[in-house]
Image 1 (cartoon, rainbow, N blue to C red):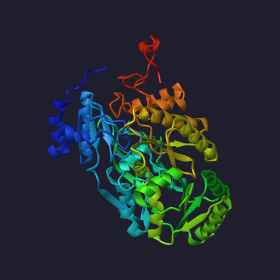
Image 2 (cartoon, rainbow, N blue to C red):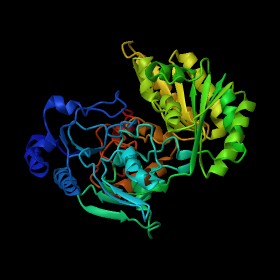
Image 3 (tube, one colour):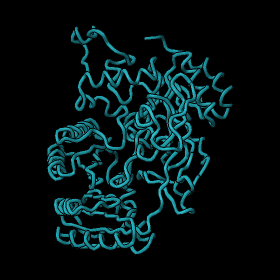
Image 4 (tube, rainbow, N blue to C red):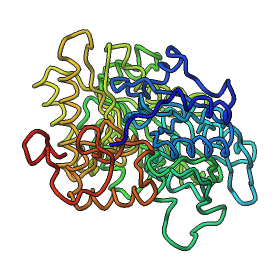
Amino acid sequence: MSAPVDLGALVPHLRAVCGDDGVITDAARRRTYESDGITYHAAVPGVVVLPTTAEQVAAVVRLCAERGVPFVPRGSGTGLSAGALPRPDGVLIVTSRMRRILEVDIDAQRAVVEPGVFNLDVTRAAAPHGYYYAPDPSSQQVCSVGGNIAENSGGAHCLKYGFTVNHVLGLEVVTPQGEIVELGGKAADAPGYDLIGAFIGSEGTLGIATKITVRLLRAPEKVSTMLAAFDSMDAGGQAVSAIIGAGMLPAAIEMMDALAIEAAEAAVRCDYPEGAGAVLIVELDGSAHDVDAQFDAVTALCRRAGAFEIRTASDAAERARIWKGRKSAFAAVGRISPAYIVQDGVVPRTALPEVLARIAELSARSGIRVANVFHAGDGNLHPLVLFDDADPGAAERAAEVSGAILDLCVEAGGSITGEHGVGVDKACHMPEMFTPADLETMDRFRRAFDPDGIANPEKLLPTPRLCGERPGVRTQEHPLVASGEAELF
């Protein structure tokens, strides 16, 4: 491995590119960037830069490439897998000052934005024309489109509309060598390899998106939202199965358990039905005729499954109130627990009852409380693993429970992540889903873009497979593995 680079010598060059106000070297200010939304992974970045143009991003990356300095891209820092965890020996490239909506082309149903634009601001720009941007993570008021690209984010409505990858048509990208390249454009289905599909969800390991062309959708004629309260998660799950089994595809089906409801009530007073063991939020959209017909059917199915109370939103304000508890659930658990881990795993929807029951067993056995908030329609779980970080060993026990939940998801035929990425947090779980040959293939693909391994190293893939090792194809057994001093992930 090459010797560490003197970042101090790099700083004047970074200032020449981004200006004095675009480079942060002060220790206290750098520490504000030490983690993303998953705070138990933290590292103070060596240097922070805040470019305002693609040319500045490219120039910073070229400086890093010339000197072999690792760089980490970061949007708003709302990620939940430590995908934007900085490097003390590297440069953190923050896109929060690249926040221009460059174009809203209603005729083509497209928008072109910079990576630091907040997700919800795309819809706000399109709404006066009767359009919106479909991917809607719960953090959409503050998460950036560039971060959504890195993580292939979803949201409550991905059940019907899909993830970020389904709504991006073009990218301007700065490669790990500092080149600016164009992938795709406003037109759909460009010929050749699907490099946009490969880039989205690559977590900054293939480069940095600096301009993004997204698809806008026509706002539906009607949206209807209901909240159904059940005595138990089983009853709520039966309602979900009945709705999907009846051939309907709601825009969203979300579920919260009693502990998640308790947290939401404590934080935002969402006024969900008292005594509910589970609440289900079902949203339908489309033509008024179809929505009305399906709404009656969903209501009947919920009642048949045991819903003891059903509320219907009659306007946007009531819809927002219903969603308030769900949208705030992640942050809300801070009201009932000093610390928590937000996990993200996916199971086949039909496996939900069994997996939820086994999560409850894990919780009871470990003494670690787990609140469940999830996209019930597509089996995307978001267990919130609660612990007291003042209790010695509690964080480690919580991490064990969190990891065991991922094991359950894989055993059930699911995945270790649905929309929060892999980052550092789950990289060591990748071998649970992929063979060594699979991982080697991914590593080769990654190195085709980044042969020197400087673009967000240690994220996504379990490389370095040994501490301090750069990504790369290994042609023989590592000597530390052979000696029994280290374990290959």
